[in-house]
Image 1 (tube, rainbow, N blue to C red):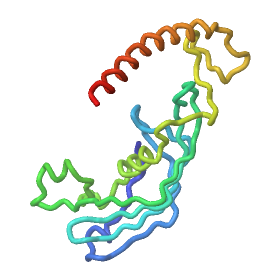
Image 2 (spheres, rainbow, N blue to C red):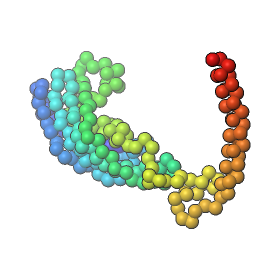
Image 3 (spheres, rainbow, N blue to C red):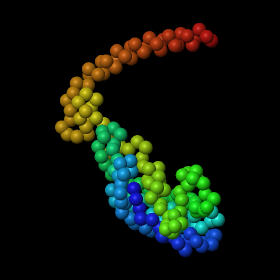
Length: 190
């Protein structure tokens, strides 16, 4: 995902401890890639940049948007709100002594164009704030294991679930013998 970069010439070439703040910014996300979160509304956040000796420290606040995710039970696409109260990232200031490894392992301030690109940092925060196990509704019934129909939709599927239940009972009987064996072995060791 691509967010317009911040032009910070004064801060990047300024003195240590200088600050620049942006209270509430709302941006439309551009150039969404396949592995990016699917953002459904503009992204809003606040950010304060602080100039340190060899970097610019960015303190983000109130990162908020909506993303489209798939329910883990029924696979239905739905939107959910994302919110992250605060996050911090450092943007290294490239010098002649900066190694290729430092540039690869860190976010870098673009000194040539006097910009700081916050796209990747905000992408990380959206991914971290996204639900680990998204559900379209708390009591989602998922999909039928026989026909694959969404059990939340009407009319409900008419698959014969009892057949599966009988198979599970057979498996349980086989495991019951294993349970008895483990119990006997445990008692004999005492």
